[in-house]
Length: 209
Image (cartoon, rainbow, N blue to C red; front, side, top):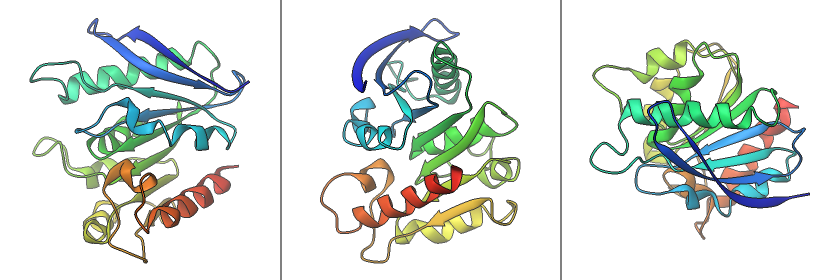
């Protein structure tokens, strides 16, 4: 039975992580939903129910730990890894990481050489971890199917980000009916391009079956 439940668990650095668990069926695979830097887990309140209809469970987590280091890379990595461990309480099926903006880049980074991850959805990723980490180097190491989308303005940058990946591995999308919207907001609201984003995303999931 479908439902939403507030949950919490702890990361390796003992931070308390709040999450929204959208449980369709505990035997189904999970998507872990990671919000952008100017949002919280409520960013997925309208998105997660649609994802449940694709026969997945969802866990939306808060990426911030508070204070000036609320979205530091080490803290965010700890939170994402703790979320992966949390959904392992239900089953050990491969997981889909679903990230927005800065967290989209984090999901790509976490997926490199990680066989627990089946696929990645990255909405408007960017070079948030430079100079230490280049996203083009990260995407070159990823072997899973990847859906990446962005606005028309972001598209040329995204093309460069994935130019080192294997042919056919990445689904790269930009809208045609308008300029588009950054991050997870592309899938919500009233922008004329919303249905384009959803259609492209649903086609990607269909390929994963």
